[in-house]
Amino acid sequence: MHVNRGVVHVVSRMRIVDRDRGECCGQAPASWDQPSFPGHDDWAMLGAGGCGAQAVHVEATPVRFDAPVPGDLLTHLTWRNPRGKTRNLKHIADGRLEHSISLQGFYRLTPESADELTQLADTKQAIGS
Image 1 (spheres, one colour):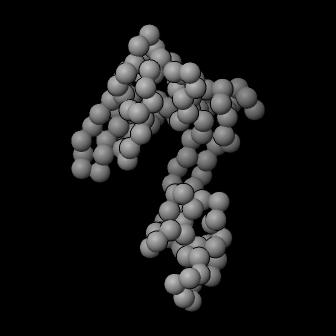
Image 2 (cartoon, rainbow, N blue to C red):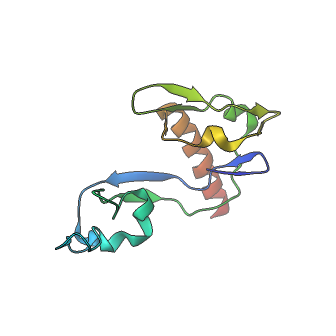
């Protein structure tokens, strides 16, 4: 997701396929000063190559910035943290997100909200193809 002038955009749909070491991960390190997953340098921010992290293999749509999330959908998107606590976006006025701070943190979309955003991303992807 990306926020520009209060408008939230779905920029890509990404699904984690697995977290197992595969051929694409490169050689396992022989010592502590070698990269953990040299074949995944571009995805290091998702955990491939960090201190004791796992390889992450994903499927994703191309990144694009033309899929704004409708304001009425913003009000009922729901996230869940690892302990099961849910939350919604705060600071929404007139269908716009006034402060992007409520999008930050380690929360995962609930399946229902993920389905709605997937539908939005896939619709824009089909139109743009």
